[in-house]
Image 1: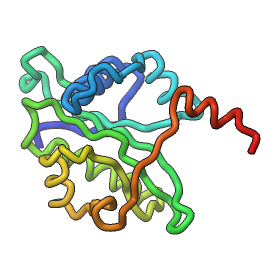
Image 2: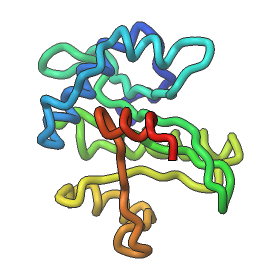
Image 3: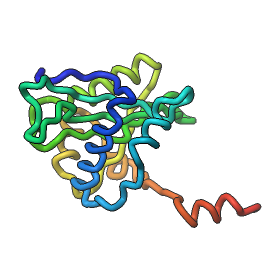
Image 4: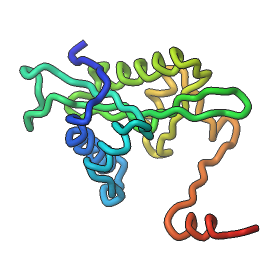
Length: 171
């Protein structure tokens, strides 16, 4: 393995933000990232964190062209299925393009799965854009099931004005 997968620290938040922006660019949504590294630090490293994050770090001699040693991340949190029980949700899995194909993404994903099993989770869930064939193929090759194709589940979201309007409704 060319990297070490470890729990992130507050000092990693700038690098994690850099990688989040890289993921947004890859997903053709670069203007959607509104989060700052300070918010990330507050939300992930408080006494009641909203998420957990792993980073993939390479030795100095393998650093990126720009001089980065943190080259990937896996962002996750815990949720619950009323039918099955504990669930680990993988929000993001990202590896810098120049480090793909070296087992880093799989190492991050496997570690998230190990964490989930250690915490009694019965499944790991995540979403993938429908056009992202390389990722869909990668996850399928690992044994993941596409729930939209298999069961017809559709991901829904309220945000912004719609969320505020919903929260103000009384019935």
